[in-house]
Amino acid sequence: MSRRKGHRHPRSQIEKDRTPTVIRRLLLCVGLFAFAIGGLVWWVLESSGVAIVETQGAEGQLRRTHVWYVRQGNTVWLEAGRPNHGWYRDLQAHPTVQFESSDLSGRFEAATVPGPQAHRHIRTLLAEKYGVRDRILGWAVDTSSSIAVRLDPSAPATNQ
Image 1: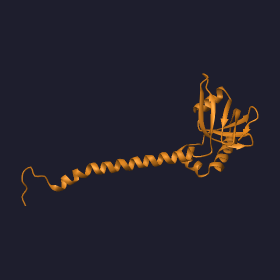
Image 2: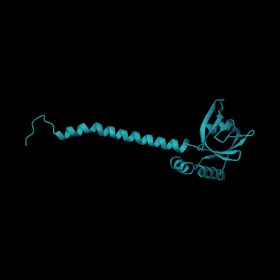
Image 3: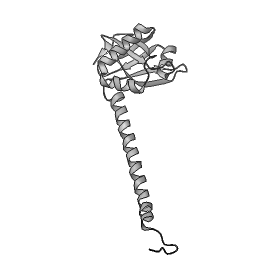
Image 4: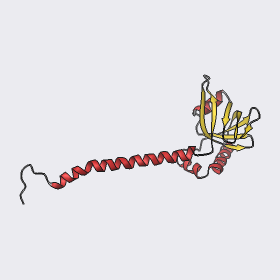
């Protein structure tokens, strides 16, 4: 079988025709994977049991941050993943914060509770409350040096 000069082999043309389809499918898979990861992150971090802490920065600006929390009576426990988180730096400058959750709201005085015992305490509380969500977060985020923060009511807190 002889080939004519300039005649393309049909197979190479088919492969070229498939290339855009393969790329589109690959991009679709990547997009679906990213969407699934985004959904998982939202479910882990935001789906329930989230409060809002309003802090005041050193310059007076207000910051509203979604946080996981554990309530023990009118005392609230939070965890700062790192000391450079904005809300944590804010409460170092201005320890009075506004706390809002589905079952409690009010003004609170924040205090960092240092040490390994406090770290174990907040990690245990969060693991008990958030269960599998806390374990999933632990795979993605290093909580080994997180900081326990205790909120005590400035005035009587309002149960909701």
